Image (cartoon, rainbow, N blue to C red; front, side, top):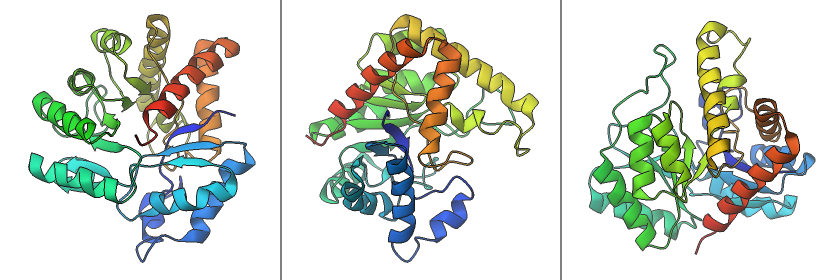
Length: 289
């Protein structure tokens, strides 16, 4: 079975606020073990977490070997004050403070650094991303600082400006990457950055009622077309479901993601080879140097 290249073990796929509250007095081992067991039951032996502010992913890394799982985590994500990201991490205001956060993560046992450079999809406006993306020069300096400390960089990024800034900065993996145009995809293809599309965060919402299917379908179709283009261009792609997000359950999420890729690209043997190459790149890049 493929590994899960993007998960949040602090979340449960049902209600993230309630899930986070369960750990507010410290990581709850019983809940963490339930999620790890869900991966073990599906023969998933590699999980890369996206971090959290309560030490839950760090505790999961400690427990994971009992389940035969190689667990990797940034411990927490790093976001700029006033920008999206508090849900999974800690903030900074200046580059000096950012460097301090990087050192804090390293001292806490981080395997890599995760940065937040943009907001998320705006379901009320197709093609739009919430908030203001970080300036390209700022992203470049953030990546430079992390790399100088010997750490790979996982970047939560959406939209053309954000994607191009992140790729130019040399991020090691690009998470989500919604609403990319052809220029952005070509830049990805020419880079060493691995793209983790997290397709099922939207696909699994169909029929749920949280958003109208008429709102979701154009987003899904746009993402499908970008996956097809990425395949033709030779972009390095790894399978990650954003497990823990609403209706994306631990263990099952990556199975849903693989099914989505297979449906989009149709030839499953080629898909598996393509994605295994991307996962191998993730494993090489995101083991702490």
